[in-house]
Length: 233
Image (tube, rainbow, N blue to C red; front, top):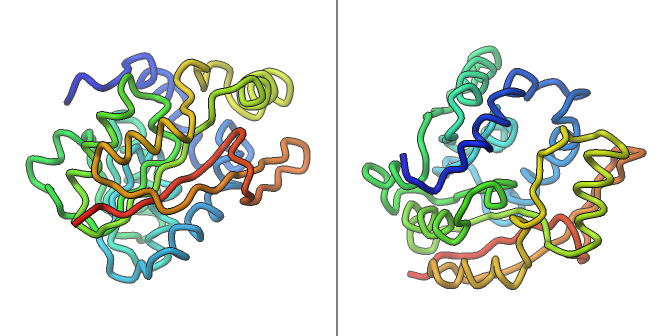
């Protein structure tokens, strides 16, 4: 695998891998926002029979949701325990999703310009070089294909919300899930996409209420946001 992997992040997610599918556990916020994210992707392209790559798939929450929309999904993750959990749950759910313990760069050897859609959600803020990861994803995407990225803005509000609030006050995420310096301004993400020959089409903010555990999209990019774009032909 490439050097663009933070082994501390791998260890962190390996320690909680068995809890991916517990809707009341550490990943509860993901269980709330996952249907919204999948619906957002499906609203931008008819996923039926499309080749979709879920980069940093974790335990397979998004992969299975995209499979429900008729996509042919492959999920990759650098944490082996995540892949094992995802495979096991897919088998239990009778879903034919291909999961690989692999990173995007190594996958390029066999799947260059192969996928119609690539989703890399809540991943770019966990790698040493997000620009490199986005470029690797672009190389896996067909010309004209769509790329979806989601991450967290870097400002005082996001620090108070995504770290102090989520990890220490409301305890809806494990402590240490996020590192503030790895958060990414929307303008930075847009520049990484442009460098990777992906034309930004839209940014949407996402609000998560830690008390009611409801979430919705809006136009406020202050904390969590999702971006999508099209690879230039």
